[in-house]
Image 1: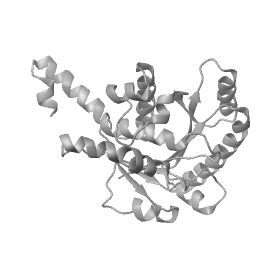
Image 2: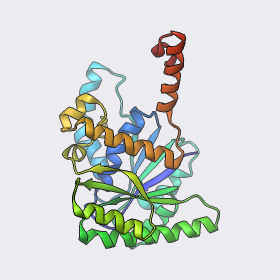
Image 3: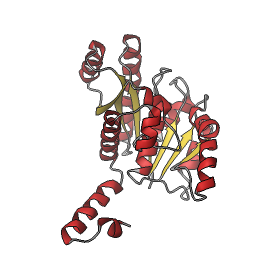
Length: 262
């Protein structure tokens, strides 16, 4: 059964669509998850990235390798069609990511969030964003209580994005969220230009694309830590861990790990 998550906030410019883009390709290519993104945001940033930026690159790749394809699926959907998609047994994804509009003032957004197993809120440490973000997470805390009372799965987490090391506001944000007893990831993403160049075709963990986007080993390490924590918190299948275990076993027997893993 698919796990359903949303990257959501009631503040624009927090990077929720970027967060979905940064994580989806690595989760698909390196961790082996079957993923769909439902782009329900009015700006359609993820759909535009695929159609306007990545489609020409894929066409060029297919000239050399006709089997080349996107690592995961993207669908443009209105909010009122989300449950038609998620309730369809033919959509057998490991993970469905819903990118909702950047607001929390309507029943359509609220209903979409209640249909998720988890909502992940980008935490931006600017003082003007802090109270609004905490207010939104408090709303999610009330949804969690209602879901728990009904025996339904629901959780929520803050995830620091655009983090600047050593900045006083980052520490204040952590203390503010912790002081309200709101859940947050231990991992985070820094304020890196490479993340703004995330693709629906290429993973930022791929060395060639990472270099093209201006990423570094440190950016790859950040992404992996977030992916690992996301998989652990949502109890998603970790095909990467299974592959590593198989490779270790075959090495001990003196058999090529590549042959066995395939």
